[in-house]
Image (cartoon, rainbow, N blue to C red):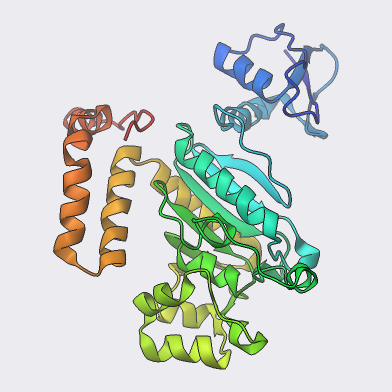
Length: 337
C-alpha cells in the first residue's frame, strides 16, 4: 500500500486534522498528531514527506524520523532551529549565518528556556549544538546590537546562550563547524564533549575590544589548559586551531571533514543516548563536581550522597543488571532522577 504524507507548516496548530486510514500504530498516529501532520491513503501516488518524494521502500525511515519527536513542545525560540536527528537526541542549530551566528540579547534567554525544557523532557537524553553554515559556530555576542544599545544586557543564570555557566542535568555536545569566538568559545568550554571541524578556530578576543570574557569561560579555560596558555589566549588574542584544541584537551575529536562534523557529533550523542539515562545523569554530575570543586573526595561525596540510593533503587539499574545476566540489550526507561 502507498500513502501520501503532507507536513503542514503549522507545527503547533492543535486544530490540524488527523485521518487514521493508513494502518499506522497508535504511537505513530500520536506522533503525526503532535506534528500536525495530515496523511491520506492514496493508491497511485508515492509518499510525499516535507516536500520530498520518498518511495514506499523507506517508509520506515519516515516513521523513525517522526518517532524521534519529543513528547512535549519546546519553548518558542527565534534565531535557532530545533531538530531530532536520532532517537533521544536534540540538535539545536544557531541559524544566524549572516551574523556569524552571533547571539542577540533575547536569544540567550530563549536558549536557556530550551535547555531547561530539554532537561525536563523525558524523551530526550543528549543535546548537540552547532551553527548554520560553514564559517562560524558562534562568533559571540551580537556586537552590532550591543553597540546600538550602549550596554551589555544581563544573561540568564546559565550564562551565554544558556550554556556557558549551565549546571543542567543532561549532557550537551558541541559540533564546532567554524569560528568559536568570545561567547561562542565560552559555550564550547562548558559543553560536556566537543567535536570540531578541521576548520574550527577558538579564541577570546574580548580584550582586543576593550572588554573581557564575562560569561564564565576564563576559569573553565584555566581548568582545562592551565595558566600560561589561558593567559595567552585571553590577553593576546591568540586563536587556537582544531589541532591545537585537541592537543590542549579542549575538544574530543576532529571530524573527517567540515561537512561531517554534525553527523559525527550526533553519532557520539547516540552512543551516550543508548546508555541508561540514570547512569548518564549521575556520572555527569560526579565528573562536573570534580571539575568545579577541584576536590576529588568532595566531588565523590556530593554525587554519592545525592544519587546513590535513588540510582540503585531505580528501574534502569535493575534493568541493566538483568539484561547483563540474560545476555541481551537493556530496554531503558526515561529517567526519574
